[in-house]
Image 1 (tube, rainbow, N blue to C red):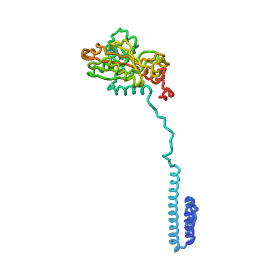
Image 2 (image 1 turned 30 degrees about the vertical axis):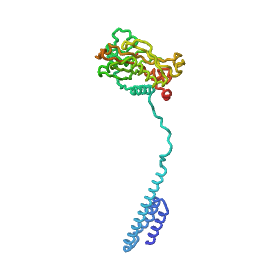
Image 3 (image 1 turned 120 degrees about the horizontal axis):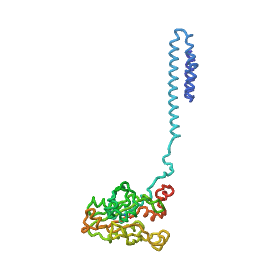
Image 4 (image 1 turned 90 degrees about the vertical axis):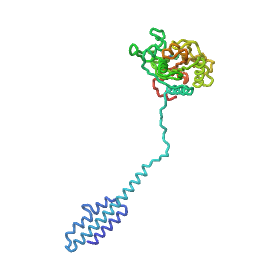
Length: 336
Ligand code: PHE
């Protein structure tokens, strides 16, 4: 019996160290029908003297086999883990496919470029409300009720005296009401006109307003500032041209053209053979507007200008339909 137990132990350990499947070994020796179990079952036939000794020995054998099995199991698990780690290894130096990142909308790009230029000229950026009182959008700007200028800016009214601003010029009034001269501000933002949508009109578009008020400001200052802006925006060789015009809130008023940067003024498709492209309205702030804002026109003078951001973007990027800016067509937007 003793030899049989020693043989079982020897065989089991040899098989385990030989790399046999631990679960298989457990069944073969310790399972219900296992070899060691069979020996323990036969214990009843032993003499009472032999029984404790063989019982002890059988127990030792079981413990040793179990210990060996536990060790083998641990080793197996460690090996499996190592294998798993090896297979799941990430090579962080491997090249990745580039991520498609978004970018700014062409109108934002244009607006930012304009802002940068005017910041460089010493202007600050301010904003005004899109929902305005009639007073700021019209009356304070020397456009009384029934003035024909109201017809040229078809306005969305919310109530009799509250409206969606049809221009950024009301921000001039807010600026002059809240700040004392010297004033040097630009104000970009949305404006609304009840126009039908076509290639050059949109009921919502963006304007960029400028205002300077100080002692001794002249038309020469206006010309100098717009000249510097045009050169930065459209190229060093760009020239500006003032044509007489009329706005109720400036006197004198002008429409300002830039020389066509595509043909240099010779005439081409972009400038419709004119050599010049109209980009903005401007003028000297009307004395009535100054006094409406409690600024003494005898003491101070100023200039103002306003331009469409869409218009500047269309000219700059050669876009011939304003609707492209609002349709969010990926293939259009990707080009900027
Ligand atoms: N507000 C005018 C427009 O929308 C533009 C303008 C601004 C003209 C400032 C003169 C001075 O047409």
